[in-house]
Image (tube, rainbow, N blue to C red; front, top):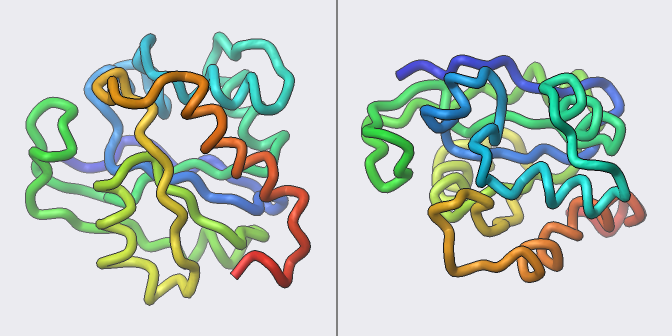
Length: 167
């Protein structure tokens, strides 16, 4: 499976949020975190005081208006369904163009598998360590919305940190 989407970013982005690979539902919908029960967009809307984004363009604007870039660690892999545990033969994205044309200074991952892959294959190349966040997938039943909101507040609070505290 080859990653079907381009990264979402602009020159003003300061944070990069990485998953592993889009789910079958997201691939069908054509955008990141598009499963109707995925809590990613509800979390961002709540964190930044916005209404829930219904369209792809509203989701894109919500991320970019808050200086958040979106992509995935993997450019390709073998995978069955949407389960990260089924990933085989991972091939990671090259982040150099994205990082050189933005102000990204922090990387966050949505799930442990994305974190492990990024730290194993990418962090030495980018020079930016990742901050692991829990998955917002409906498969992650362990974390309730309130807990996710508390942890994902790092995306909002990161915008307020002085540069020297970010590494």
